[in-house]
Amino acid sequence: MAKGRRTGSPVEPRRLTKAERKERARFEREQLRRAMARRQRDRRVLTAALVAGALALGAFLILRPAGERGPTGGLPGLLSTTAPWDANQAQLEARLARLGLPPVGGALHIHAHLDVFVDGAPVTVPADVGITAATHAPLHTHDASGVIHVESAVARTFTLGEFFDVWGIRFTDRCLGGYCASGEDRLRVFVDGRQVEGGFRDVPLEDRSEIVVAFGTRAELPDPIPSSYDFSSLEG
Image (cartoon, rainbow, N blue to C red):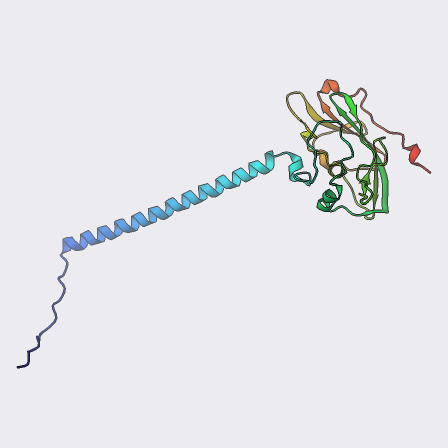
């Protein structure tokens, strides 16, 4: 005998009471409120992290030594030692590759003179800065007179910072080699007898200019500050 099948309408789900509907609506509103609060909290955390990162980056860029903002930072063979310094030729070729200076040539041929003092004592700018048997930089010296020869295949403005980069001596607004500003000791630069206020790396190497780089106290500055140089030996 075959089993009979149940017939009739399906059972309808129970309708919620008014109180239950109100409770469900309240629950859904609470869930939505919590979700929105989480999103707002996450946005605040993300914004705070971005602001903190931007402030940290800005402080780093502003407060780090000027030389680290330019080519000086990380140059091969860069010396942060005390004077005296030799021509520092060992990694000259690698430094020049990093600096990307024009090749030596005759489109620009000028001379500037550099005097260096540390704690009141003169420091020799050695011969053959920027020169080896295999390499010849557009900024170089031929002797220990302090004369900087600028001989470039491209006529453009070269700077004091670029010369120190070729030499491989740390040079920023605060530091010269292993000497950095502390207490009354500070770095000062003069051009033709006039003091330069910051931006030492950007001082242009102009024809027949006399440049003084002095580290120490104000009392240790040379008196008088050299303001000119006799370039007559280079004529002819």
